[in-house]
Structure formats: structure tokens, C-alpha cells
Length: 337
Image 1: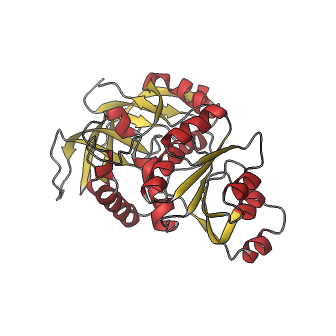
Image 2: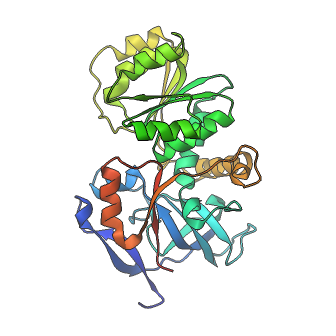
Image 3: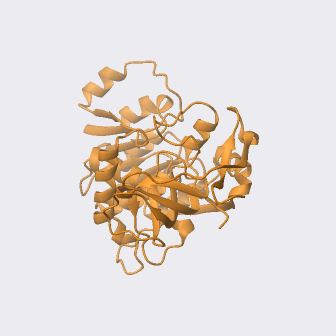
């Protein structure tokens, strides 16, 4: 392979995991205020599955290569870089796309230092999931000490991050998940209670746990199929934040009247399509407020939860595993060095 090229994950047409393969593509060059990151690892996200299926196009101007987060070392500084970063520095980064390749360009403001004691694979599991959870809880959810927070998909990357960040905020995390193993992992991370949505009505269980008060905040990546149960267990003046639609898009029934009765707020958000300034502010706030707590010396140590690490050549297997919904925490891909 020539020095102008790199390996990247690719698919020719929308479809299943079998359409994915590695191919040579042109290596990108950093533009003004950008750096070139030599990628060591990149984590898998639901957005990658949706993009592969043809259901989630990258934002305008973003790379069409999959991958919303990565870790690695800085290989090149573009013109007009003003930060403190140097060639060879380890870093992790939030991306609108392009992470599942040997190199990716990124605005220098999106880079974050890798906390001492973390591997590059662990670091790759932080940016998308943890910035999403931080955004949901603090920027949008205004989480307060003592709040009850219901976290759907509690064993996912965002879920495992949200449990730990909820605890750090002095609030009480409750989770839903589809197996006893996932609930046990969530409780090890600090969930006060977990409900198996396949075996019980999580809304009734939540109301019982909160002695009828309900939850102050719901982090919901499920959507349509959960709306009635969500509103039922929402506390008065509660906030329900919708950030995914794994349970469908359709709502049938008196959503508005039930929500109005609770004086509830329904807030929707996506991180990938946010503008550069918003992401820059988010990265700055997270780096200052949260990142030091990943250090081995932190009394409230935060930890990214890794389920499996695959070589990027096993990209088909990694996608199939995520689609099986068996993972607890993040699935990480390692790039050839």
C-alpha cells in the first residue's frame, strides 16, 4: 500500500453485515485547524448499523466511512492549529464519521487527552457514549442530586456511562435491560435497581421503587413502543429525553394529554448532526468536569465498559454481534498499526 492510501471499512450497497469489507482508500489531509489522527481503535455505535442499512446518512461534509469515535496518536498538524497538541501525542476524539480507518482528520477542538491508566481501546469507547450521556444528563436533563433517573438500554455504551455519571451527580439511576446478566452488570456499576422489560412492566416496577413519585428524568433510546409506560412513570414536571428510536417511530394514543397532565417535558436530541460550536463546547465541558475522574487516582473513578475487542478485519462479525443485542458495554475495533 502506498503512503497516500490507507485501509478503511467500506460497503458498496446498503444491507447486512456481510456487505462490509476492508479496502484501500485515499488518506485524508488535515485542513485549516485540523489534525490527522493515526487511529489505533474505534468503537462501534448503533449509528454505524443504521448507516450500513441505508437509514442514517452522515451529516453534510462528513466522511462516509463509518466510525463516530476513535483513539490514536497525532500524525500531522494542519495549518493554523493553535492548540497545545504535538505530533505523537495520544488522543481520543468525537467524530461525525471516518473513525473506522487507519487515519482520520478532525478539528483540533474535538480532541481529548487520554486519561492515565487507560488503554487506547478503552479510550476509543469514551467519546461518543460518554459525551452523549453527559449531554443528556447535564446539558439537556438538568440532573439534580436526589433525582430518580430511568435509563433505558442500561447495559449499552451510553447506558453504562449514564449510570456512572448519574451516581456522580448524586442522583439515583434505575435501568431497564433484557437479561439478568445485563441487570447485574448495571447494578455493579451503581444502578439502584434494574427491571427486565421482557419479564415485568418497567413502569409499574419504577413507580413501586419510587413509592409512587415516578422518575424525574428518562433517558430513552427506544421511542415509540415505550411512550405510554414512560409517561406513566414520569414524575410531575419530569423530563423525558428521546435520543433514539430502536423501538419504532409511531405513537398511537393520547400522548399529549397524558404528558400535559404530568406537566412533563419531551426533549429530543441527536449528537452527530450538531454543529461544530456545540460539539466544541460539549468537549470542553466534558474535558474539564468529567475526564479527570477516569484517572486511577480519582476517588469516584469512572470506567468505560468494554464487552469485546475485534480486529477491524472482523468487522462483519462485530456488526452481527451488536445486532444480536448481547453486548454489555462497548464493542471496539482495533486498527492495524
